[in-house]
Image (tube, rainbow, N blue to C red; front, side, top):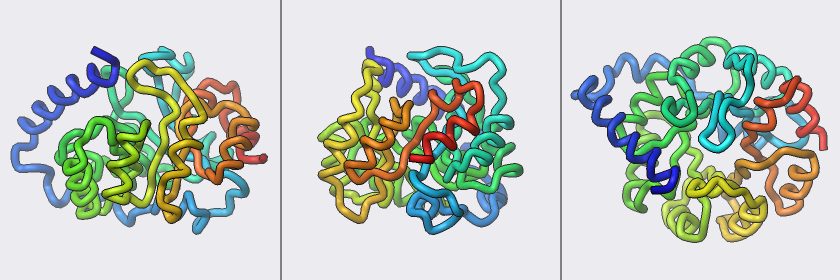
Length: 263
């Protein structure tokens, strides 16, 4: 069983526990407590904020199955402050606990502190997780095409819209590409990391982006570490990036982020 399948199998158990806790779904009051949504799409298109150059979703991630613990002095609050100072367009928060040592509470905490759009990065397989995401204060949520059938993906997008959540739909290969070209989400992330074996190939973004609808906001994800990586991907028309590991591990994440933006 590859890593992605192991993660999904664990999510099935987590969703079962979530349904036991919220058999009727989340209280409408919890779903309406977030306040006005900060648009991820607008931030990535440059319609809000004053960040020059590339638009970067900076990620708060404590650990990963492939890399282990990211930094010894890990602090979500300190990273968020660094990302704001460094010019991030949005902040991504990895909330998976078993494999990434994440916590959902980080979302609620940053909702009270940060003013940037907040993306929940999680392995979403059930609509109740979308309610959980909304109640936690996220503005947007990750949907991974590889773990959802086309009909499931369409239904998750519809439910997310009902909850006033934007979606970053992640693809990895041509099969995922075919799904999103039929359901047409506004924001598509292209993962350069193969979640089956965690290998990375930046050419994945260039190959798949060329086959997406021209109005799609394209985000390149994973393996982006240097200014040359950013420059190369921009040559293929990609101007939005989700960057985690290289920022979290940097001695000065704010300076590192500012450096990547200044290309």
